[in-house]
Length: 471
Image (cartoon, rainbow, N blue to C red):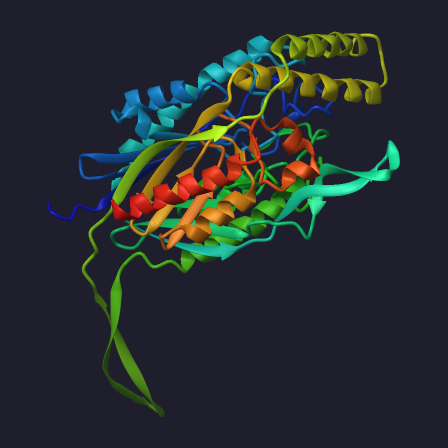
């Protein structure tokens, strides 16, 4: 067959944890365990193939990250469905209302965290097998809409410790840069029936904050469910360059807000999906028809499918790092606050004291991670994961890039529709836009990258997209 069709298959496994697994991981939270479940968490897999030689497997978790499990998940999926390990793309929605994903969590119960983490490669493999069993010929096309549930989250406020100064916090800046694009890739069976969709959007899933005590997939989980109900197509979510974008209403304990924001996004995704035509046709005028006015009768004539195109690639990009504190210094600071946390959680200290100690311990723990991962290095390689489906390009990378990076890449892309996001592969920190460094704030304080890293990422990704278009 000289013009094989794309084939696609979708599978899903529920990964909602037991209530014995520690919850969330906010530095300001005072609870360890969740009290219930808002909506189930899932791992979803979309397998796309062309002929016998090209395949990509998109694996998406309703989790904040999988932190060190990426390769185990790739290997489990590749082994289960006999694909190349490097053709398995692992990403997360970056949901913050999920089980704790670090087995060294300072709140305790590491054995429950470890057991949950150990279950994830098998869950992904099971979803991948379901996707392989569901493979069927499809056509694909894409469209873009807009949703405005995201806001730039870098907010400047008065500094309570110095009335003459201001500080940058994680909040809401209605005048700041955002990326409102809702990117949808639609997959239909050959008879036109909807089968699956990729839904891409740029916004931190931090609707639920430290006071929330429910496991939840946050707004991406709701958006997927709403879109599936409206279209009849399975849905997988791709997180964008959301490093400096959060929900218009965030850090709440009210799941009604999650439902509202997720519904707004899901309905916009459904609207875009319905407007996409995957079956190529031409309208031909046939004859007039008298009906008071003379009406035109038109007929749809099928057009031969263009050759299907599916290309998968991985490319390292070297980004510069800035110096980190010495590991011994970071470990000593962490031990100090971990000891203090153990004291205030056992001696009846008030909740505000526990909260204040928790966030300091959490921030010190993050510093240890940075010193361990980046401390002796001047640069690090990120991985661009590239996927071309016809005139659609989907790019994922490690870390949490600012939305300006995604906007610049999409503006320079030669493809008709381009989606760029982070949260793919190993988690490698915030990648701020250069002007953020002078402004300060959480993302800048915790990034391992030098200010020139963002532009290098834009240039490397743009070059890779042009190479992909010429391939």
